[in-house]
Image (cartoon, rainbow, N blue to C red):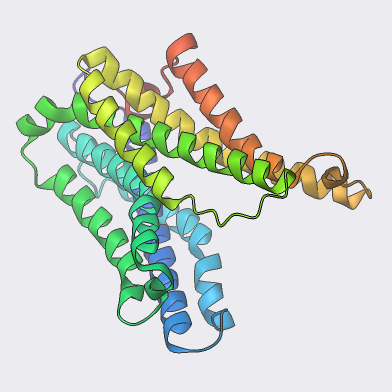
Length: 292
């Protein structure tokens, strides 16, 4: 019989489903990105062959297929369902999800330093190597790093991730707003948001690492990151579907609202919603998912 502190089989199965789904999606997306960059670096065509695009479009399907496999792996009794095994899956999923989302930052840094050379031989592999490094780091943190070391540094690590996400979003929002201002005032200026976003992300990570120093702060940081990712996906989908619905009935908001505003809607709303829910309402969405 499982101990009272052991997460339920249902929760463990859901985390396992997310782990397997993320891995399959990650592999398809990374492999498709590598092929796309390869064709861009070695041919004159800007767009890759259709079969390469099909691999990238199949990435969301990998989430479904892998999720079903991961769920059945636990519910069929073939997977370890101990507390430590569940903890490892939670750490892996969190590290991979956060690292994958933040991997755009080093890619921006590479593009800032290399310019168009990033899409030439041999530099086109750098985004792929970044993604592989994220995967390896997630695996090591979850399955090879000493458990005691992780518990000692968990709070600071979660704070750093929270700060990096907040800094990255604030950097992107600032870039979009400033770009919209330049376009509105017809200012002729070559604008690159890469350096600012990289700096904002790094400063946010440092601030989060330094300022998060309690167990409660670590839990709130994890809650914020989970809510932010879910909110970004939700508001992005809602914005896209709303614009498509309006276009279907012959309405175009671009005639009344600057186009850059639509890029800001999911970013601003997601950041505001995650901040309010995590620190105002103090939801426990993360704890309910992982069974803590």
